[in-house]
Length: 388
Image (cartoon, rainbow, N blue to C red; front, top):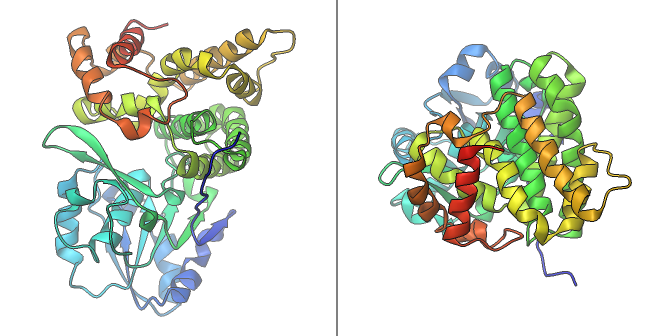
């Protein structure tokens, strides 16, 4: 029996090589006269940002750039940027970059119309007022932030990642142009690409999954798994980049509507306390959490194995499902992701505190296909510490 569900996407979604050239036209449709482009310093130095500013200026729009976004941004980064732009009269924001730049853009848009401490917006649908219009343009194939209605930040007060979840965080326009990802270095391609794969697998097996999200998630798994090795080791291969861009986009759409589960819940404390990049934490933990989850839905995990390109003919349902776990662990190793918690600086003594922190993330754990107690979360962390 299907459960009630809601499906959300950006108002306008542009895809395909060269689609970034439409940003000026789209900004005009949003009433733009003065636009702020939000990015980070590294990306601004590459020249990619010019591919956004030129089409905006061609439409006689005044354009400013702020490149103060930092990786895994803390709330303080948000607040610092917001103070400098609040009274400048910007009518449209354009975020370009990886997940950090896109999440910062989302949050800044709503901060302009929801004054007060941004931490008060943390949680589900705490945002009262729609923000100013904004456009999101990813330059990595991974986070899916351009099509999700959450934004994740680090709270340095307690070293925990926290999320703002609101439909107002969906952009007015999302532009996904694979050409912008060609110069992404191998390690970042691997971490962000595996992050997208986690989104697809978790949303496909989530409690809130629906027929709409299932088809999208499965195709995302197919696209990413067939192309991520090539994208990492031969980044100029445009077909692989296009597969990854579309796979990431589709995984983001599935994530945005079906949600994710225990992989993300267990990854957040690693990011907050050990500064492990989000994509690395997710992909490291994926096989260990899946090994626990697989019994909750053998049919779906068997379908994941098929989508990964595994030959499951002649296997029992359980063996087919477990094939997915081994295939994902192998894929993660192939693209250079650390395979144990020891590899990212976690000690055995850290595990109880990590488990306690992860157990508090009910929003994600309640969507996991199998129920997890603190004891079981700790067991998964210990498994990930020892390695397969």
